[in-house]
Amino acid sequence: MSKRALIAKYLEDIRASYWFLPTNLALFAVILAQLSLWVDKETVFLPEAWLTTQVDGARSTLAVMSQATIGVAGVMFSITIVAVSFASGNFGPRLIGNFMRDRGTQWSLGILIATFVYALLVLRAVQSPYGPDGDNAAFVPHLSILLAFGLTAISVMAMIYYVHHIPEIINVSNISAGLGRRLKAALEGEAGQPPSTTQGTIIDFPESAPDCTVSLRDCGYIQTWNKELLKQLAQEHDIFVAVQHVAGDFVSPNTAVLKIWNVSEPSDELSQSFRDCFALGQNPTEPQNPLFIVSQLVEMVARAMSPGVNDPFTAVNCINWLYVGLGAATDLMSQLDFRTDGRVQYPVINFAALLDASFGRIEPYVRDDRIVMSHLFEVTDRLAQETENKQAKAALQGLIDRLKNPADT
Image (tube, rainbow, N blue to C red; front, side, top):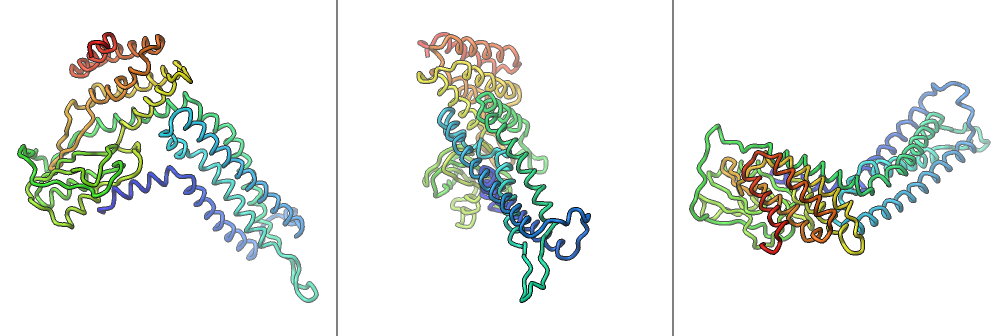
């Protein structure tokens, strides 16, 4: 149970891989081939007209199927790598994970590889007459060949879908829309979970200096952390825990990630249990980290407004999706910097920080472009009119004043 943060990280890594789904489909093809060959050997229930395939014809057909599917799969892998390289070069390297997680690409590649594996295994089972006088009958697995035809037909449809799908996933409008929808969902989820209390009792969090701190003894970005396990550990040991860094933050081996009260020096076992609540990686990820989605949209704006590209309409589109995310957060998100949940206190995203991480960081890149600046003014003013939250209005008005009078900031 203490490794749940690490398990969550591994599951996310698996989801963002090109090998997991194709590997599982290939294993399924192995099982299907063994099952269909067993049925072919035990019983024949196909119509007589479907049992006319001879040994040479079966081998030729299966060989063509296997060669064609693995050849097309190789071309598809090449197209995928080219598309990913193009997207990362034009829209930002941090967007690679979005393409790696794309299920359409994974399924298309997996189906063709599975068809190749299946056809190859069935081809191996086809036997010519053997024995001193050829008295042992030939074996042609008619049902298995029929299933190979079906898988080949599915592979053809997967190839057609893939050809349509690749231009769709590298379309800049679709990329920004996907990021914007995930940002909206993440912020609504972040804001829609009020802190719980232990058995209905609100616990006063200590205001004194902490008794000790805990570091993770490693470096990297926090990719996932387990709040429920922290609450359980704090309850079991009658201590208070203040989390200083959450998903998306970079920590060093000496960074104090946790501040602890009611214990002067935690045991090695307890300290390791605390560390197991966090999983580190080499780069920030989207789970539990809406600001990473914001940074991807900001990066798209920065690249679109670079002198070599100068694409204000892509920047406008990204601003629209940031506006959607900010609109979801204005009246839902707390204005506090920390939230207390039982015996655990942790940082939360407030609206002012979210506004600064999005529209605030866009400002230097778009200031000299009339089209983008006018649109930024429009959506900021619209947000201020739509929200009833006074603190959100104040933050938006501050940004508007800064946009109008940059020399005063």
